[in-house]
Image 1 (tube, helix red, strand yellow):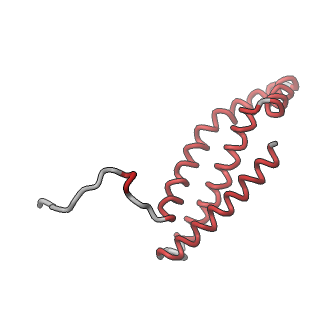
Image 2 (spheres, rainbow, N blue to C red):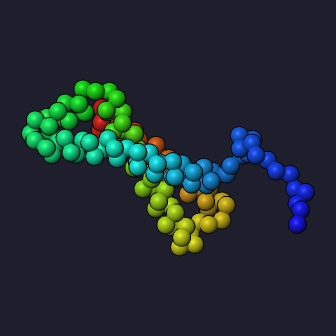
Image 3 (cartoon, rainbow, N blue to C red):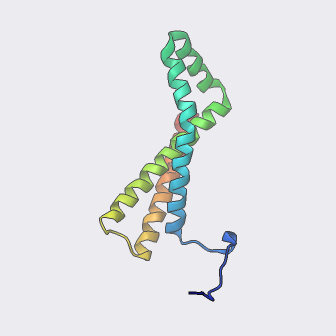
Length: 125
């Protein structure tokens, strides 16, 4: 069966609904958390190896901007991922599955994630 429907392969021209963007960023935050585990496992390993290792990680996290930025990024991704995960669980119970409620829930998730990102930034710096 041949379809004569147009095919748009240029994703930059498609306007995604907010709930789709929330779902996509939920997956992206999961990838960020997965990749960030490399940094976290290194920090745990070194900090638990000896008191000097703990002091080394502590000094790195206090003095190194890049380490603070990675930690802030991990905390921000974790906060967003948890909030979006709760949104998905709520939707699994058939709450907010229509377009307007999904849009509202996505707005709430983005707003709360922004608040958590600011709080994580204040805590890290």
